Image (cartoon, rainbow, N blue to C red):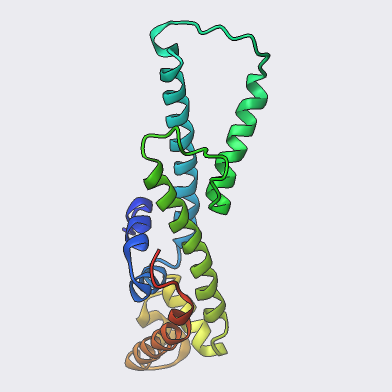
Length: 187
Protein backbone atom coordinates (compact mmCIF):
# COMPACT_ATOMS: atom_id res chain seq x y z
CA UNK A 1 0.00 0.00 0.00
CA UNK A 2 1.36 3.39 -0.93
CA UNK A 3 1.18 6.60 1.05
CA UNK A 4 -2.03 8.64 1.07
CA UNK A 5 -2.25 12.01 -0.63
CA UNK A 6 -2.67 13.90 2.62
CA UNK A 7 0.28 12.21 4.34
CA UNK A 8 2.46 12.78 1.29
CA UNK A 9 1.68 16.51 1.18
CA UNK A 10 2.12 16.91 4.94
CA UNK A 11 5.43 15.04 5.03
CA UNK A 12 6.67 16.81 1.93
CA UNK A 13 5.89 20.23 3.37
CA UNK A 14 7.71 19.43 6.61
CA UNK A 15 10.63 17.52 5.10
CA UNK A 16 14.18 18.57 4.38
CA UNK A 17 15.60 18.16 0.85
CA UNK A 18 16.84 14.60 1.50
CA UNK A 19 13.49 13.51 2.95
CA UNK A 20 11.63 15.07 0.01
CA UNK A 21 13.99 13.35 -2.45
CA UNK A 22 13.23 10.01 -0.78
CA UNK A 23 9.47 10.69 -0.90
CA UNK A 24 9.69 11.17 -4.66
CA UNK A 25 12.04 8.18 -5.08
CA UNK A 26 9.89 5.78 -3.06
CA UNK A 27 6.57 7.00 -4.50
CA UNK A 28 7.70 7.79 -8.04
CA UNK A 29 5.11 5.59 -9.74
CA UNK A 30 2.17 7.45 -8.15
CA UNK A 31 3.72 10.79 -7.17
CA UNK A 32 2.06 12.95 -9.85
CA UNK A 33 -1.25 11.12 -9.48
CA UNK A 34 -1.23 11.78 -5.74
CA UNK A 35 -0.49 15.48 -6.34
CA UNK A 36 -3.35 15.74 -8.83
CA UNK A 37 -5.70 13.88 -6.51
CA UNK A 38 -4.85 16.15 -3.60
CA UNK A 39 -5.25 19.26 -5.77
CA UNK A 40 -8.74 18.12 -6.79
CA UNK A 41 -9.66 17.41 -3.19
CA UNK A 42 -8.24 20.73 -2.04
CA UNK A 43 -10.19 22.57 -4.75
CA UNK A 44 -13.42 20.95 -3.59
CA UNK A 45 -12.65 21.54 0.10
CA UNK A 46 -12.00 25.25 -0.52
CA UNK A 47 -15.11 25.53 -2.69
CA UNK A 48 -17.37 23.81 -0.14
CA UNK A 49 -15.94 25.74 2.79
CA UNK A 50 -16.45 29.04 0.96
CA UNK A 51 -19.99 28.14 -0.06
CA UNK A 52 -20.95 27.08 3.44
CA UNK A 53 -19.28 30.01 5.20
CA UNK A 54 -20.68 32.61 2.79
CA UNK A 55 -24.20 31.14 3.11
CA UNK A 56 -23.87 31.16 6.88
CA UNK A 57 -22.66 34.79 6.90
CA UNK A 58 -25.62 35.82 4.71
CA UNK A 59 -28.09 33.99 6.92
CA UNK A 60 -29.15 31.63 4.16
CA UNK A 61 -28.75 28.50 6.29
CA UNK A 62 -31.34 29.71 8.76
CA UNK A 63 -33.94 30.63 6.16
CA UNK A 64 -33.50 34.40 6.12
CA UNK A 65 -33.56 35.97 2.67
CA UNK A 66 -31.25 38.92 2.19
CA UNK A 67 -32.51 41.38 -0.42
CA UNK A 68 -30.00 43.52 -2.26
CA UNK A 69 -30.52 46.08 -4.99
CA UNK A 70 -27.60 44.91 -7.11
CA UNK A 71 -28.06 42.83 -10.20
CA UNK A 72 -26.35 39.48 -9.88
CA UNK A 73 -25.41 36.67 -12.18
CA UNK A 74 -24.89 33.65 -9.93
CA UNK A 75 -23.61 31.47 -12.78
CA UNK A 76 -20.92 33.94 -13.79
CA UNK A 77 -20.01 34.60 -10.17
CA UNK A 78 -19.65 30.85 -9.57
CA UNK A 79 -17.49 30.40 -12.68
CA UNK A 80 -15.22 33.27 -11.66
CA UNK A 81 -14.93 31.90 -8.14
CA UNK A 82 -14.02 28.43 -9.48
CA UNK A 83 -11.42 29.96 -11.77
CA UNK A 84 -9.92 31.98 -8.92
CA UNK A 85 -9.68 28.86 -6.72
CA UNK A 86 -8.01 26.89 -9.53
CA UNK A 87 -5.58 29.77 -10.12
CA UNK A 88 -4.79 29.98 -6.42
CA UNK A 89 -3.95 26.25 -6.39
CA UNK A 90 -2.13 25.94 -9.73
CA UNK A 91 -0.15 29.17 -9.55
CA UNK A 92 0.12 29.50 -5.75
CA UNK A 93 -1.46 32.92 -6.13
CA UNK A 94 -4.15 34.09 -3.73
CA UNK A 95 -4.19 37.68 -4.91
CA UNK A 96 -8.00 37.59 -4.97
CA UNK A 97 -8.10 36.56 -1.30
CA UNK A 98 -10.17 33.55 -2.32
CA UNK A 99 -9.00 31.63 0.77
CA UNK A 100 -10.12 34.21 3.34
CA UNK A 101 -13.63 32.75 3.59
CA UNK A 102 -12.40 29.21 4.32
CA UNK A 103 -12.13 27.45 7.67
CA UNK A 104 -8.32 27.34 7.70
CA UNK A 105 -6.82 29.72 5.12
CA UNK A 106 -3.27 29.31 6.47
CA UNK A 107 -3.34 25.52 6.06
CA UNK A 108 -4.73 25.90 2.55
CA UNK A 109 -1.96 28.36 1.67
CA UNK A 110 0.65 25.99 3.08
CA UNK A 111 -0.83 23.08 1.10
CA UNK A 112 -0.90 25.14 -2.09
CA UNK A 113 2.74 26.19 -1.67
CA UNK A 114 3.72 22.60 -0.89
CA UNK A 115 1.95 21.31 -4.01
CA UNK A 116 3.78 23.86 -6.15
CA UNK A 117 7.11 22.87 -4.62
CA UNK A 118 6.27 19.18 -5.16
CA UNK A 119 5.63 19.72 -8.86
CA UNK A 120 8.82 21.74 -9.35
CA UNK A 121 11.02 19.30 -7.48
CA UNK A 122 9.44 16.32 -9.24
CA UNK A 123 10.40 17.98 -12.52
CA UNK A 124 14.02 18.29 -11.34
CA UNK A 125 13.95 14.64 -10.22
CA UNK A 126 12.47 13.40 -13.49
CA UNK A 127 14.93 15.38 -15.62
CA UNK A 128 17.87 13.98 -13.66
CA UNK A 129 16.46 10.48 -13.91
CA UNK A 130 16.22 10.85 -17.69
CA UNK A 131 19.86 12.01 -17.77
CA UNK A 132 21.11 8.63 -16.53
CA UNK A 133 22.87 6.40 -19.06
CA UNK A 134 20.87 3.77 -20.94
CA UNK A 135 21.30 0.76 -18.66
CA UNK A 136 21.29 2.82 -15.44
CA UNK A 137 18.13 4.60 -16.54
CA UNK A 138 16.38 1.44 -17.70
CA UNK A 139 17.09 -0.47 -14.49
CA UNK A 140 16.42 2.42 -12.12
CA UNK A 141 13.23 3.42 -13.91
CA UNK A 142 11.85 -0.12 -13.80
CA UNK A 143 12.75 -0.34 -10.13
CA UNK A 144 11.21 2.96 -8.96
CA UNK A 145 8.24 2.49 -11.28
CA UNK A 146 7.78 -0.85 -9.46
CA UNK A 147 7.36 -2.63 -12.79
CA UNK A 148 9.41 -5.61 -11.65
CA UNK A 149 11.18 -6.90 -8.57
CA UNK A 150 14.96 -6.82 -8.35
CA UNK A 151 15.21 -10.54 -9.06
CA UNK A 152 13.22 -10.16 -12.29
CA UNK A 153 15.28 -7.16 -13.37
CA UNK A 154 18.47 -9.13 -12.71
CA UNK A 155 17.17 -11.99 -14.88
CA UNK A 156 16.15 -9.61 -17.67
CA UNK A 157 19.53 -7.88 -17.61
CA UNK A 158 21.53 -11.11 -17.29
CA UNK A 159 23.21 -9.78 -14.16
CA UNK A 160 23.57 -11.10 -10.63
CA UNK A 161 21.02 -9.95 -8.08
CA UNK A 162 23.74 -8.25 -6.01
CA UNK A 163 24.99 -6.38 -9.11
CA UNK A 164 21.51 -4.97 -9.72
CA UNK A 165 21.17 -4.08 -6.05
CA UNK A 166 24.54 -2.28 -6.15
CA UNK A 167 23.62 -0.44 -9.36
CA UNK A 168 20.31 0.70 -7.87
CA UNK A 169 22.09 1.98 -4.74
CA UNK A 170 24.75 3.77 -6.81
CA UNK A 171 22.23 5.46 -9.12
CA UNK A 172 20.10 6.52 -6.15
CA UNK A 173 23.18 8.13 -4.61
CA UNK A 174 24.06 9.76 -7.96
CA UNK A 175 20.53 11.09 -8.36
CA UNK A 176 20.51 12.39 -4.81
CA UNK A 177 23.81 14.24 -5.32
CA UNK A 178 22.58 15.77 -8.58
CA UNK A 179 19.10 16.70 -7.40
CA UNK A 180 19.24 17.86 -3.78
CA UNK A 181 21.23 21.05 -4.52
CA UNK A 182 18.25 22.18 -6.63
CA UNK A 183 15.65 21.58 -3.92
CA UNK A 184 14.53 24.35 -1.59
CA UNK A 185 15.85 24.10 1.92
CA UNK A 186 12.34 24.43 3.36
CA UNK A 187 8.88 25.65 2.50
